[in-house]
Length: 283
Figure 1: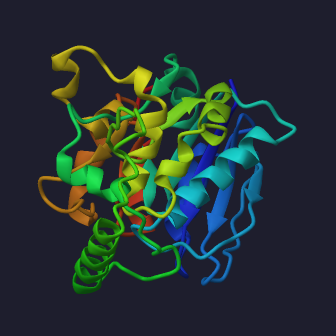
Figure 2 (figure 1 turned 135 degrees about the horizontal axis):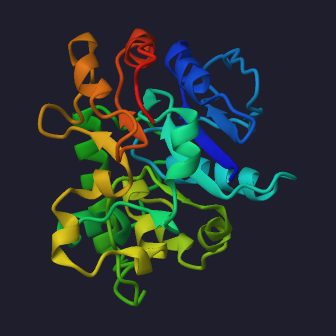
């Protein structure tokens, strides 16, 4: 099977993603890369994988620019002349937890999408009102609270409620996923997308809502958490999320070629090298 790995990247250091490419470098695994327009596009190399850089935009955390970027990446995969069986979304600070051979053989389900048991009313505020924040840096906590509070009240004064008559069952979970490529068009062509434009933090809602039929119907399925459902090794207990460092190399090694496809977040490229340098890792 052929795989497309979509990468959302930014910054002036692409060494972690270069190590990810090195680990998964394979003629059946290609990379579709979006690099933030504000940063210099990195020089990435591969021997077997094909690397595609898509047209860049400025991406601002928490705004719908993240959703637009994901959709652009999906369209690039759909429009490719190569047929891909699976598509995966990661960031430039994620690393693989599978060798290339194990990775190619692992996936069997239609979709690996993370869901929380139920979406909280507070999370619905992210899409209930219009937030014209697309080109604004809101990561600062004070700016974020001030602007979202301001726009919520403007919407209330104008009587705007985007979800009241939408008839949508909103869902939430991690925004990182692995999915069969033939399902991507269902996302990019969905008439539900308009609810997620001019929102905030809705990158954790839009895929889950559109693809809600993949939400597990058994309570026990949620015990491992939404990140594990998406095959992502993410630790929210030690951080927001925790950034894996040099002291965590053995922990990451212990999870190679198990049930996680990628780990998030990684502090430096040396960690990826150290995790995979031991050739005794069994497949």
